[in-house]
Length: 456
Image (cartoon, rainbow, N blue to C red; front, side, top):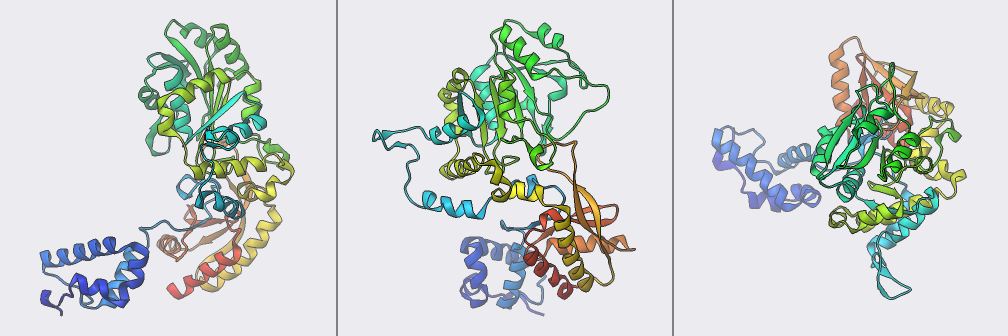
């Protein structure tokens, strides 16, 4: 057994050829700190593993250690298409190549080429949004929570904002609307009950301190049964009677009617504006199928207040967000080709026969590498995810992998996550479900799954 005297120095390990690849991918300071931590622990406890003197073994250990400590692509076979934990909406490779010259060279981000002076970084995207939604004005921040916060802080600081109790949402990461409102400097004035809110509830709550009516998309839940909610046209009429703005948070948002592709209907910003809303907020990286952004469209008088708020600068998006968002919005001007060019919509509209073809090919591979498991292609449902249509499912197909021993199923789930390109699936009813809408890169997926046999 090696002793503490046999430990190689940190400097020797860092100069060894065996660790060169790890250092190039992780960074020399990160590797150095990890090596020191390992050796310090061994010195403290006086217990060395047998490999502690071999640089090659260090490389293998660090490779395993760092395998989950870096951003990396995965296969999303969970059945949640827009998965918050897996990067939300897919982005187009072609579009990324198209914006490359803009983000790798100087660009007119805030420069007016016609006047030869400072310009407005939002203007190009704003003009595009005005065309697509019919809004008087628009602006962009770094996500939809920021969009709501900016609206609240710009229009109602120190005043009351009326919201239905049934819309006081909490979304991922314990993010709660009441807490955001408090941080924005507003006072929450909740009306109605969890399942039923009427117009008279809003009317009776309006007072001298009321600055806004806020309606919030239910996001990741759905209330059914004995319910009642006030429609946007009714709320808009009431708000304008008292010269108050109505702000509608759509959460997710799409600029086209999804029903044209046989998908469930999701309200669009242009619909909400036509119904009388003064401001509408929605996300860029959900149903819109672009990068993370918070988009605000509405009346010019209110958007101007948002733009003049010092908070706007703290929340503004970077150049990559703006140029990618503009390229995405450009696709919406030709909706007839949208399903071919927008990856998210392509996933959602893939036909069941195509999914069954994918399933047959992947099942053949899995039956070879997992002979002791039951592998079958079955009918399933998937969800859009990230707060989009939480009560709606989309017909899909999945591969179901099962075994008499539940421990074997759980162990396989872990093995899938540890592949060079991890495969993320859904564990349901003691079986693994691999939804095939996420199997678009079928050749790469099959090659990844084939390595399960060698890891068995």
